[in-house]
Length: 547
Image (cartoon, rainbow, N blue to C red):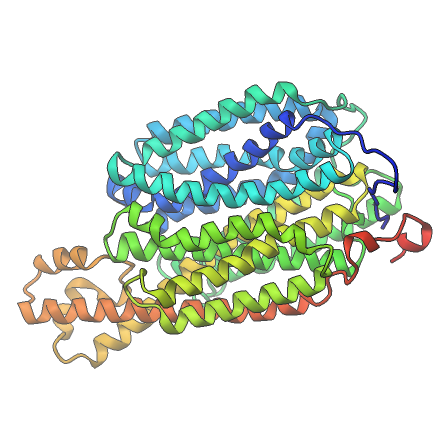
């Protein structure tokens, strides 16, 4: 594909544009990221308010990512057809409505619906950010603006955990989404400082491709999200149906992969016929760009898994406050923010391949380290060090892979780059949250089952009363409350609590070890990232287009 080069010639002056319009785009990225980051912080409050298990609340997180990933490519085409500014303002207003629904929600169903609306809005905001930056900025300003999106994403994580944790502890989880509402209003006001070309009514939306990619992403996400409830292989009683005894979860995953391949085949066929595809595969025209997408998929999945796992343990397992969660996650979120901001300075010294391999090496070491040193106390120095190291690798990688895609694409494909980024990031976020939840519950169930079998103080009659072998993540107080309704003795209650504590910590350690293994595998696609530095990018030419 063609590689774009935006450099100022020696001795020439580069015209600068006001940064005021960028403030609105920066806040738009914060809006989306703050909304998502606020959900794990609010986990304990929602579980208490609605009386549902934490996995039900995680469905809201998965729903948001699923809707964005399923609709973002269609959103990019709608932006091109109707006009980026018009669509941008409309969906920002819709995001405000979703925040209002969160504040007023009487049930967890409202929360899930609100996040579906937020996801539909983000499906257009995500590609519009790249397109509007390309419309409003050039040269070094454009590179700085693109880099700031990574910083905004990291900053929102820090602020969501800190502000959300404080509000959640002192007031409640609902006021946190009052901030989301205020951000949406601010973005809408700043949108009037942006400029953009009018929409092009000649742009057609490939509905067949939209169905393929939308259905594929829904199938993948539903499959991963229900591995625990429906069964990894054999269908459980809670599965809605089975296929010759097989759980529908793996069936949906395979179906999602098949539909994804069908989308690629259809898009290539449409491109060869000279028709406009839903998204140009030219943005994935070389192995280097595909490596960037694979790396983005893995690094965002790992981030989502950690952002779900830590609040789950601190708020649900340990029964601590959202403010404690914010303090525990601060080393990670603050490090991601600082690294995402400063890593751009390394681009002139090191090629993306070097930074990518080093970044995944760092996240692998950090996760493996955490698996061995983590305890039920998150404030220990070894744990903080592990979160710090993971944050350095995460911050460097998220900014890096996005920049690789953007700098390799010409301006006219900016919307397509945005849609690919949105699909990848949000699919990864949904899958990372779903898989981490399913993995931890599966390991927990196995650990509890083994412990129950080997514990002579827990007779089968008591196990049958409590159904310990199918227990979800519960606090010690909740377990004591359940056991108080049985004929368990004090010694048996203490034994059951001890089983719960040991099983949860073991599940956490094994889960982190699995995440470390996934991170290590990501070194392979990272080793295929570009090995040139930004100032070495070749000028556009047929030769470079074929690379």
